[in-house]
Structures are given as C-alpha cells and as structure tokens.
Image 1 (cartoon, rainbow, N blue to C red):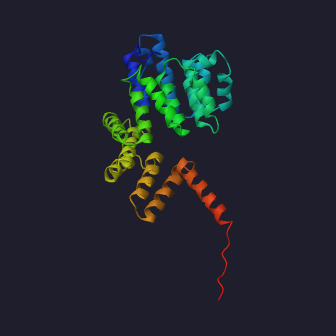
Image 2: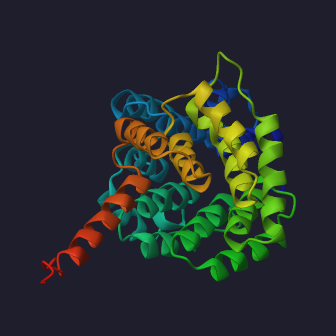
Length: 306
C-alpha cells in the first residue's frame, strides 16, 4: 500500500505497531474504516499485534479464519507467523503468486529473518516489495545483523527519496545511526526521545512492548556516554515492567560500562536468565565462555622447579 495515499487512521495504527503499542491496535475496530482494503490491512495488523503480544496461536487462528479467507495468502502468512513455521513460509516464497503478496513478504520475511541461517532467503523475499516501508525497515535490520552497515545506509537513503517524513524511515535511519556513530548518535537520540515521550502508555493499556522507544532512548544515551541518563531511562522501564528482557539486558551493558560491582552484574544476569534464558546476550556469553575454555584447555600449568 502506498504510504503517501494510506488512510490516516491506518497509518496511525501502523505507527502504533512499530512503537509496540499493541493494545491500541487490538482495541481498534477495522470496520470503522471505509475502504475495504484498509479494513483488511487493519485486520491483519490486529492479528499481528496479538501474536507480538504473546497470544496463543490456537484462539488467534480461530479468529483469523473468521476475519480472513482461510484459502488466502494472507491467512497462510498469519498462520505461519503464529506458529513460526519456516517451511510454510518457504513454500509461500517459492510460489510466484504468493511471493508477490505484501503480507507474505512482510510476515514471511519476519519469520525467515528470525530463523537461523535464513537471512538471505528473507532478503530475497523482501526484495520483491513495491514501495513497502515495513519491508525497507526489515531489510535494514537484516543488513545490520549481517554487519553490512553500508547496505543498510544505502537502503535508508533510497527510502528517504520517496518517504522522507515517514516514522518508520526515521526509526530505520536511527538504527543505522547507532551503528555509524558520531553525530548520528545525537540524531538517533532525538528520534527515540520524541517517540518515548509521545508513546507513553496509560496504566490500563501498558505492555512491556510499549517500552521499546524508552529502551531505544536509553541505548542512544549509552552510545553518547551519558550513563546517568541511560540508567534513569532503564530504571523507569524496569519500574514499569521488571521482567522485560530488553531492559534487563541493556541494564547489564550499562552496569559493565559504568564499572558497577560484580555482584550487581551477576544479579542482573541471573534476572535475565530467569526471564529469557535464550536471550542473545546470554547466548553470546555462553559462546565466549566455551571459546575461552577451549583455548585454556590447550595449555597446562607446570610446577616451577628449584
């Protein structure tokens, strides 16, 4: 869907999705939109928000079968997302008709990007998009995960030529800015600070996903060397959601950077292990420990002689 001609209410829903305000989306009634294509787009966005919020696939798929045509590419893509079915996405990707479907591209690209060793397949599917900003953002994320900052920069520059004022382009540019460094750190901070201020959830609609802008602001502060400000933002996030893995993980990074006591870091690591045992930070630490043990095993300690 052309971002420049999109229904304003649908555009607001998409912005809410990208800033983690899933409850705002699930509370919206798609039938209030006049255009049928916008209604379907909002319905798909609601289903995706429910999945992102952690709803079980069984009840969600029942509702999806009622709101979408069960024989459609859209339903197949949502089902694959709910169950993280990589094989189903690959089947859709290899279907000429399905792979041209925007929902298949975005949802399928997300599933493939999250699967180990499937990044190139995700890029191949996403490359078929026709002016879809979410596809652009996913492509940028994948390039950054591959340490191809040059390609991420190129993707953002291209998108800015036709969607300069898009929130999603600004967010993607900020992601790249945190990798590039220099003045880009400050630019990224301004974007995330504004998002954190404008997307604060109410106590009745709050969810840990709505902390994304606040945590991104804290990460920007870390890169700028403003450790007290970063700590304040992360403490704010943890006060609202003590079990949020992203807030805990970044608190670990902050604690190490600030030279906090070993027991403080150890406590945070235990907290992260409790709430998200498979978190990327923990996986990286385990890998480094294994590499160290392997290297240390090559050497033996010899007793010194007189």
